[in-house]
Length: 153
Image (cartoon, rainbow, N blue to C red):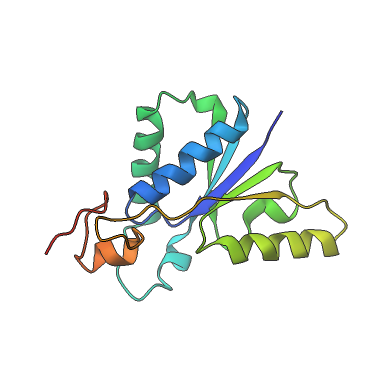
């Protein structure tokens, strides 16, 4: 039985996010995936407008449903801090990108300090755009690329 955590703002549900989500479900092997979705307050800390949490959640759910994943295999929870329930709940894996890898290290450090066992970190490499640079929400918001990494200009 594998309990897996993954999280993010999922501002634009791009191919990098999809790789994270797919890996989380793969690791769960039929068990539950906890998906942390940043709150509106956390998302506002970015230097640009981000869709509200409900819109981002609806996009996320629509994508998961397209994978034919049964609803009993996942839960989407709103994150009001970078850690969510990873500091207290038992997880086998946490799936991260290079961008969020430092957060996973901090989670394990805090878990260890409180006497909890570490979570195995699964670091997914960036998905590259056509120009061999990482696909990112920032690049999409700037109009450089689309959610599949295709150049726009």
